[in-house]
Image 1 (cartoon, rainbow, N blue to C red):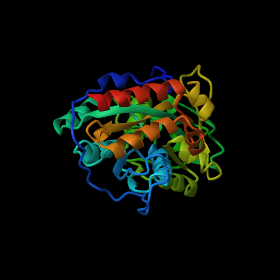
Image 2 (cartoon, one colour):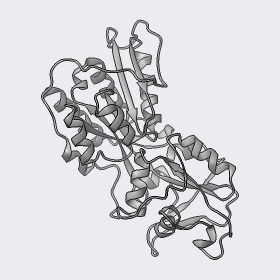
Image 3 (cartoon, rainbow, N blue to C red):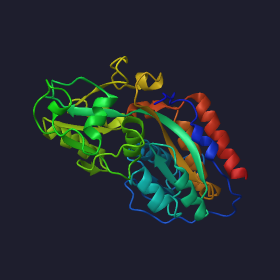
Image 4 (tube, rainbow, N blue to C red):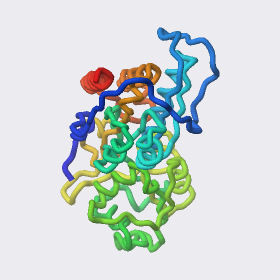
Length: 330
């Protein structure tokens, strides 16, 4: 796998397609986790009102949820709902059908998803908003493993792969491996499958799948012989509960722990960019536009780092804002 600097703009930006749109977008409310009481706005846009619906990646969810809370503190008459549906699940079930304004994604949108969206007159506009260090974790008592190669991970997570730890290394315990991981609708699942297992290798179905990353943490914590993977933010807030595995890419590579610094400089093999996609028509709605602009500007802040991700660079923010303006001017 060729390493990519997660702070650079994704090549998938070239897949953006814009459609001249007029009028405000119709939004269908979802049962989101973030809401606010109606009241008089306190920010510079005191008269701003409306609704913004966000779906998608559980990895991006903490960022979107935080941005929603911060925005509603300034604009009490705007209701922003955030629903963790998984990247693929969000695109397929909510964003592409036109039922959400923004979809978080832990991997670039696929060509088939773009086709699905445009078939419904939804034109996705891509913004890279952070970088992540996808983290492989084991139980705190798993003292036999500190570092693993891509090949060893592949042996464990591929279909019909290793069943016991000793199947991977002879000196590891002769105990059944218990796997906890994302559901197949997750962008993290897709990323892991493509970059670790390989496009021609099928991900195992013999694992506990969930869109709730905290449940993955819980499963690993409760089983000495467990393993799972998730976004770094969920490891960051649970470092005392599970143990992160260092990753070595290739036999000659170095064992590198997941960290924000290692994700930023690209030395961590599982560093990846994170995205949000906005419906271009929704951006014609003032509330959606102002929230998206707020989100992109705040993506450079320490709040993103506190959540557990690498914030956008100033160059990335500038590029995102330029993309936003291009979208609303078309």
